[in-house]
Image (cartoon, rainbow, N blue to C red):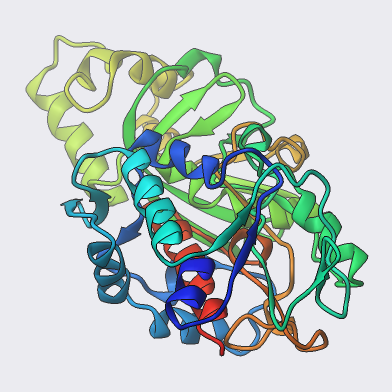
Length: 377
C-alpha cells in the first residue's frame, strides 16, 4: 500500500523484500479469503497502551472504509460483504495480492527481492542507497514462515527506536484450569476480562471454542491482546464466561424454574436440553446439587459467571496468534506515521503499538498507515 500510494503520487519508489516473494502473509488472512476491511471502522475497535491523544482515531478518519473500497476497486477488486466484513468477490487472498503486485508493476516500482538481512540508517540509507523517505512496513513476529519474522523490530532497535513489549494478539486464551471436558464445544458467549482487583478491563462477545488449555474463537481472541498486556505487566488476569448471554441472570433463573415445573420427570442435566450442547450441560451442572434450595443460583453462577485465571504462558506463544500487541509507541509517530525524532523515516502496520479485533480491522489499519506514509511528498 505504501509503495503503490507513493508511486501513484509521482515518487520514484524502491520496494525491498527480504524474501523471494512479497505479501506472502496476506495469503493466510481470513482463512485464505482475506477479510481486508470492515463496513464499520471505529477507534474502539483498536487496542493500544500508547495512544495518549487519539492518534489512531485521527489516522483511520483519513482513510475510511469507503476510501479503502475505492482503492481496491481502482486496482480491480470487486467485493462481497458478510456480517459487515468485506472480502474480495473471488473469496481468495491471492486475488488481492495479485492486484497489488500488478499495480506495483504498472506504476514502475523497482522491486528488490531476496534481500536477506536489511538495515536502515538514520540518514535514510538502505542497502547502500540513500533515499528522501524510508517506510518500514515489515509486519510483526507473527507467521515467521511468511517472512513476518520480527526482523522489523531489529531494524527499529538498530535505529535507536524504543519499543513497548510485544505480545501475541488475536490468539487463544490460556487458562490455568484444564478445559478438556468441554473441548470442541462451540457456543455463543460473553467474556469479561478483569485484573486481580476485579476491575473490568475488556468485554467481548461472539462464538467461543473451548480447548484443553483454554478458550479460542472470536470471543476469546478479541480480548487476548489486552490480556497479554495485563499479564506482561506482572498482574494477574481473569476472564469471566457468560455461556448464555441471551438472557440476564434473572431471566435465566426464571427459565430454569419454568423448565423444572414443566419437566418434573427430568433430572437437572436433562432440564437444560435445548439450551446448551450436551457436553457443556454436563460441565455446567457439575457439581450443582438440585436438592438444595440454592441450586438455581448455583446453576446460574456456573453458566454465566464462572471465572478462570489466565496463564502467563500465553504472552510468549506467537504460534497461534494472528497479529501482535505492542511495538513502536503511537505517541512516537506523527499523524502520517513518521517517527518524530527520525526525519523522513516512517513506521506502519503491525510494527506500531496498535492491534484490532477480528473482522478486517488489522488489515484496514495496515492499509491506512501504508497510505498515510506513502502520501507524503
